[in-house]
Length: 113
Image 1 (spheres, rainbow, N blue to C red):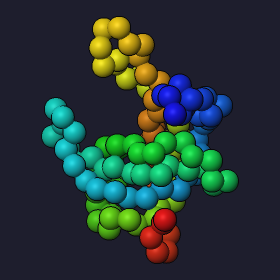
Image 2: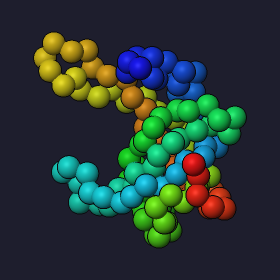
Image 3: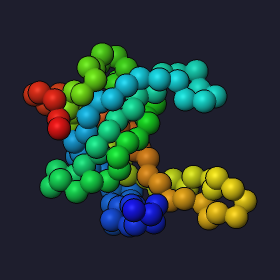
Image 4: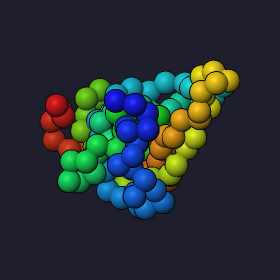
């Protein structure tokens, strides 16, 4: 699946505040950052529509929650458009998304599959 196809279903959600489900993956430091970031996987709308396979967020609330790998979460966030630089001078920049003002709503029972 190309990058364009991967995010074509997301355009209608840009700048909208939505309730999402996802799975906590890990904490880490992104290149050039000094604040812990959180990697969330399988970001989906409530109806199951997949928005992204993973997203890194920097938000202290998620770090303080001491999440377990595989923990299913319900969050609220605004979907924002992000343009990633191309890997070479000849490639087009890539459309991507990021989560604006994410807020942890609740921990869901069990692990997601």
